[in-house]
Each structure stands twice: as C-alpha cells, then as structure tokens.
Amino acid sequence: MFMLLNLLLESVQAKWYYYAILSLVDVEANFLVVKAYQYTPITSVMLLDCWSIPCVMVLTWFFLSTKYRFKKIAGVVVCVAGLVMVVFSDVHAGDRSGGSNPRKGDALVIVGATLYAISNVSEEFLVKNADRVELMSLLGFFGAIISAIQISILERNEVKSIHWSAGAALPFFGFAVAMFLLYSLVPILLKISGSTMLNLSLLTSDMWAVVISIFAYHEKVDWMYFLAFTAVAVGLVVYSGGDKEEDQHCAYVADEDAECSGKHFDVEACSGNRGQKTILGSSKTGDSSKRDLASTGIGDGQDIENKNAGKDARGKKS
Image 1 (spheres, rainbow, N blue to C red):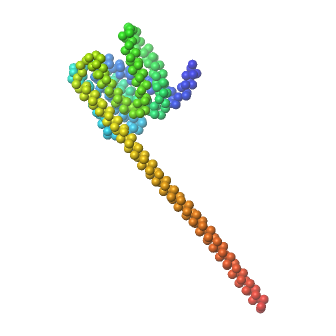
Image 2 (cartoon, one colour; image 1 turned 90 degrees about the vertical axis):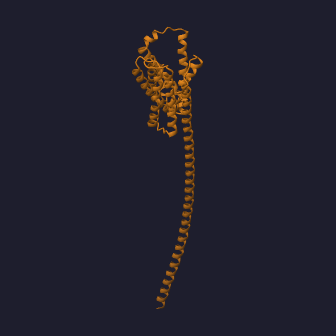
Image 3 (tube, rainbow, N blue to C red; image 1 turned 45 degrees about the horizontal axis):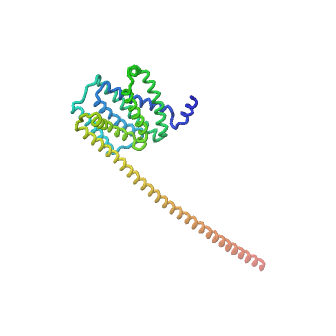
C-alpha cells in the first residue's frame, strides 16, 4: 500500500509537499474562522472576513502578476461597501450580541482571512499550472489527515461531549455536503475568473443566509440587507465587466500585433525578392563583364602576335 501511495505521489505534476502545505493552510483558515464565533459576534466575523479580499489582490498582483484596472478596484470597493451595510443593518436592528473575548475573536478572524487569501491564490496558481483533478484529490487527502490529527489533539473533549442523534448528525452531514460541493467547484471558478472573483462571490453567502432566515426561520430582516445585497450584486457585475473589457483590449492588441507581423513578413519577403533579383542581376553583369574581359584579352593577344610577326618580317628583310 505504501509503495502504491509512493508511486501515486511521484506521478503528480507538482511536488506532493506543496499540496500538503496548502492543505495545512486551508484547514487552519477554516478552523480559526469557525473558532472565532465562540469569542466575537457574527457581525464582526462577517466584517473582518472581508480582509481576505485586499490580501488576495495584493498576493495576485505580487506573485501572479495580475493587473487591476480602475473598474476592477471600483467593483471590489462596491462589494465591500455592501458587506459593511450588512453589519450596520445588524447594529441598526439591535441584533448585535456581545462576545466573550472580542479581541481574541477578531484576531482569529484576521489571521484566518489571511490564510484564506494565501490558500486561494495558491490554488489558483496550481489550477492554472498543474491539474485540477490532482489539486482536488490531494487537497482532500492531506486535508483529511491533518483534520483528523488536529481533532484528536485539540477537539477530542468536544467530540466526546456530543450526544449523537438524528438532529445532531443532520447539520454535520449538511455541512459536509456543502463543503464537498464548495471544494469541488472552487477550482473551476479559480481557473475561469481567479481568486479575487471567488472571494467577492463568497460575500453573497451572507445575503443567502438572510434569505434562508426569512423564508425558513421567518425572522424579520432590516431593510438595509436588501440594499447591501444589491450593492454586492452591482459590484460583481462591475468587476466582471472589467474582465470583458480587458479581454477585448487584449484581443485587439493581438490582432494589431498579428497584422504588423504580417506586414513585416511581407516587407521582408519583398526585400528578399529584391535581393535575389539584385544578386541575379549582378551575377549576369559579372558574367557579361567576364566575357568582355575575355574577348578583350583575346584581342590584345592577337595584336601582340601581329606586332611580333611584323618585327620578325623586318628582321628577315634586313
């Protein structure tokens, strides 16, 4: 079994320990953000989780050489503004509840959001330079091992205290299915749109939580939630519109380059034809001049022979 595992790890396109490190970062990001809910209010978690967006933009700009135009930055600002509206709507509605240790919870969220950004940018790089199926399989493989070790060390008392029943098992099962779908679809979105678009799209999860609370739990929601949902949707459209404009610009530049290279090729071809004609002309000129020189040499030789014959005749007469 270990030999088979070693064979599989040697056949991957990227180094296996890259996936192990990425799995560790991803597991700790999820652990820290979920742990933060014990210490700080949900509104603080929602607000501070936005820290992953500027982190992703900086990391993609620095490591992946991603360029962000004004329209993309404007889309990000609108999305973050929409999420801030969600927090203010909670405060306005009086739903904010205090936490046991807000500073500790806020610090956990900030560190977790930074790890989320590192994980997303690393996944984007591997998706675009390695294999998507390889990423999904090895990320899950190493992530399961790391999570099992961490639970056995840090969370074993919490696991023992759970009274397992259908009502307790169903949320765990639903969470597992949701995370399976998320991690199956995230590499596809990373390959198509990148990690920044992924983090902006994840902002809508707070809005969908509001929709579920309205229709499933019949809770009253402040009117600012709907305004925030609209702001996030508009920000995503603006950011996506920047992608289309850049693609059109790149296509236009590529067409211009192709046209210029075609013209350059035509000019070189014409120059080559002219050069060939010049060489042919010069060779013909050289041949004719050689013939002229040869004929001139023959004529000069005949004149010299005639002169010598005349001298001999005079000598005989004398």
